[in-house]
Amino acid sequence: MPSKLRLQRIGDRIRQEISEMLVMGQIHDPRLAGISITDVIVDRELAYADIYVSAVEGQERAAEVLQGMESASGFLRKTLSERIELRVFPRLRFHWDPTPERADRIERILADIRKEEKTE
Image (cartoon, rainbow, N blue to C red; front, side, top):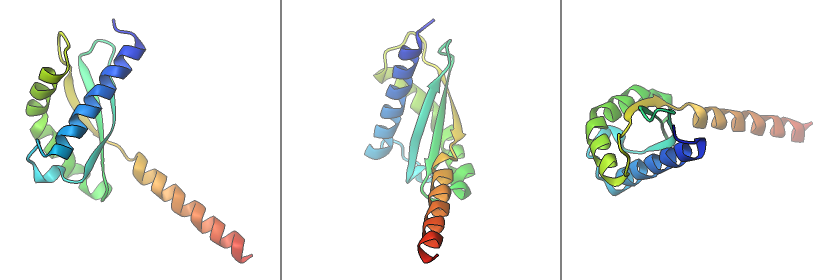
């Protein structure tokens, strides 16, 4: 079994490659415009890579983006297996990452608190 560091490196490389494909326009799906890959976690057996995605518009695009990623998963897996040398390439699973939305909400709450403190 690969070490945790190796799994992290594989996940980082997958994230980097998918991000490059999105930026370079190699994935021709309008549902995937304006998305970002926030994290990739590879399991210990290298059977699955859990890919977390987010979009600027937020949760309202979650279903559309995940559907677009699922539809592109065969192309992504084939292209990634050509670019990243692994004996067996993991299957790709896609998940919505609410972290950026939560961070934005927390930032707004903190900004409101700061405004209230200044007025007092």
